[in-house]
Length: 171
Figure (cartoon, rainbow, N blue to C red):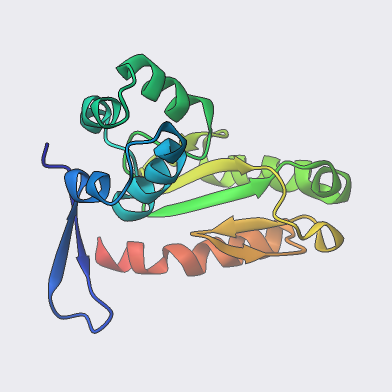
């Protein structure tokens, strides 16, 4: 099992490799450690590789179906690498009442995809999120985990352009 992530350390010098087996070794085999392990994998690798499921199941003495069931039950976990830019639009009631539906419709139109989809070039993913704790500043969204409040369609366009600018230059 060679699912690994090449990451540059804080000084930007030496790449570090974090493998599934390394992360497994850091967690006890008690079943209550499954969710913390899945979070650690996703935090390190960006996703939970499907080829890691058998090793995870063996580590916790669970079936592959049980591990797969947990991964697919929680919408936070993903089995494929994320897009370079991930946009999350809050779907909670406060945001919906303050223009979240209009914001989502605008985002879908701009990106050309619905929730859980990707832009045509694959560079931006659109995902729902359920409450970011900023209800008084609704509607709220994130771009690559940075939280933005009181987002209008025009502000969405500006934030998205800023977030994807490095992606455009790299192409």
